Amino acid sequence: MDIISFVKRVPTTTTIVSIKDQQLDPQGVEYVMNPYDEFAVEEALKLRDEAGSGSVLAVSLSDGAAQKELRTALAMGADEALLLNNAEAGNIDCMTTARALADSIQGRNFDLLLFGKQAVDRDQHGVGPAVATILGVPCITEVVKLTVEGDKVIAEREVEGARETLEASLPCAITCQKGLNEPRRASLKGIMAAKKKPLETREVELAGPSMEIVEMALPPKRPAGRMVGEGAAAVPALIDALRGEAKVL
Image (cartoon, rainbow, N blue to C red; front, side):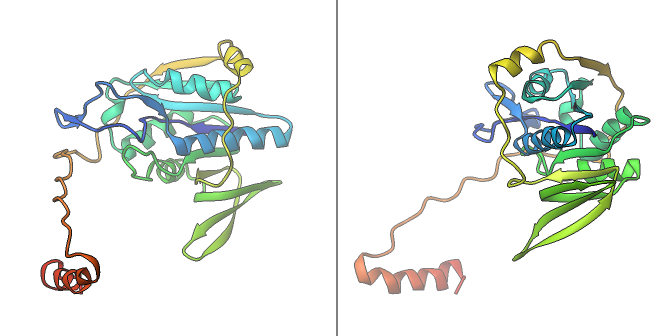
């Protein structure tokens, strides 16, 4: 089974965000593999191993800095990696990203394309479905259970209050949700082996942006809270505040 898993380099979710020149100020920011992409890499490795043959290719579009995250994917067990290098890759929208990723694998045989359901930096959830649309393959999103049977996949996804099961023919694209698996951590042996695995860097041109960031700013600070009354007397005071000031009652 030949699988392509897509990886994005993102700031950690504990990053203290500051804005400079209408973009995230990278000073002091720690970057990691997008957590949802870890589920995609792990599922790719698991399905390859279950099939007993095939390969896993990890792909990332970056300004060059994502070599670290691709090396992590290789250390986890991916067979090879491809870095699509462009200096502007950190400031592009999901459709521009999808076009570049789709172009990079045109003509390559694959059974599955695996994506994280979204990147934790922009939360757009658009790249996986867009790549699938460009390549003309089916796509199932936010998958929490995945099984391959012959030339089809059976996927489960959570909907409000239930789960739904879908089937799609191969090749297809899947976006991976938390709960699909437990991503492995790279062992020392895997880290050493990753140094010998192929990591290709390919310069790419990007299409014109589909969207433009007009302004980027931090949300306004929340007003300070206040104590309303004491003991049992606080109850009518709180009700009055919710009804008269907040107007939620």
